[in-house]
Length: 220
Image (cartoon, rainbow, N blue to C red; front, side, top):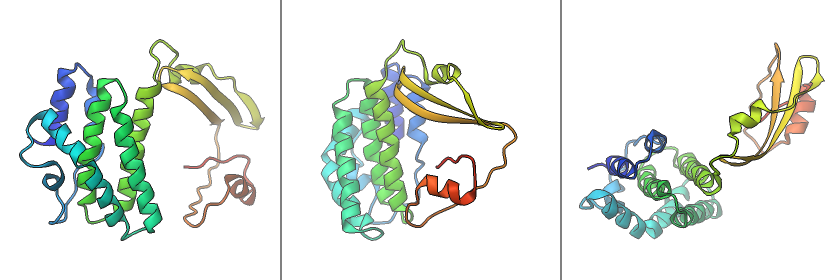
């Protein structure tokens, strides 16, 4: 049984909703190199969620070494080692969380990483995105507080102030049902947008805004 099906079955057994099972499709499987496959790390003989979890945890250190080896072809050794440390720390951190979703996310992280490391292209960005994705969801599990206003509620309660003709700003800060948030918002009416792509060394956003003669700017 494919690992996604095992995780989906576990989520259903725990009574978890589609919000969890949809996360399993966030990183579709790509084409793998012949010498690296899911079975190499997690074992073809592992049946059921518990066996998959056990095999995945046993493979954690090996996956960390593989991150260093594979990413070392694209980035510096120090950068590759940093990603490996983040991965192993995240696996450990998910194991320390109480919600049942954390257990499923940990297995998904291990299985997805084995697939990403077997892909021929864009390993650097995929490894980083995979870690960031699961880190973000782990943070929600850690900090969520049912009963508090949702992030959408906080935005609806925002106090807007006019900063220029047709442009308003608001800061939304406080605890929410998904954890603490601090967000700066812009609301524009009929704006003229200018998109700038700066792939070279990081340039402060304030400097880019000044150089463009703009009223405000956002990054991302």
